[in-house]
Image (tube, rainbow, N blue to C red; front, top):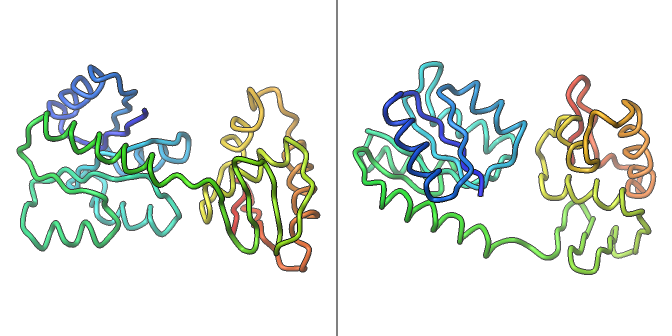
Length: 220
């Protein structure tokens, strides 16, 4: 399980890094809003532990942008702001849990385990979006009820997008998930597969994928 800790206080950051690592979690620790957003683009995390008072912005504003951009990772807020209205605002903006400071490591770990369990129980077997239905068990795809024949690579590519609906995915991230190493992939190969996928899925003339120049692609 991968956990991203966003905390600018050195002592607390090291405490969280050590405590979570000792429980066999893979932990990344960053100190700013910018570094946190960069980390989310580069890697999928199972849980994000987010402080609100960060040196380059407010954690609540960061959380709001994440949710608007399509990031669905569970977020546990850690904050000295322990008023009822602060907790309500954090949860309304998309946080999954809120733990006021100071806190015990035991309670933090229990809440992290709860978020991980919750995520594992809500994983879908069938993913649906814009008339596309992808069955993870049978490895079949339908568009508006009609079966679509995809190669294994095309299916894997579509699955990446269906698991990240609405999220802008960088080319490097897509390539790393589809090929063993994106360094071995010709720069045009991803474009070729995207073209094939579009021709098979965009049968009604309505665009499904958006090309974000200089970045990657997005399933709209």
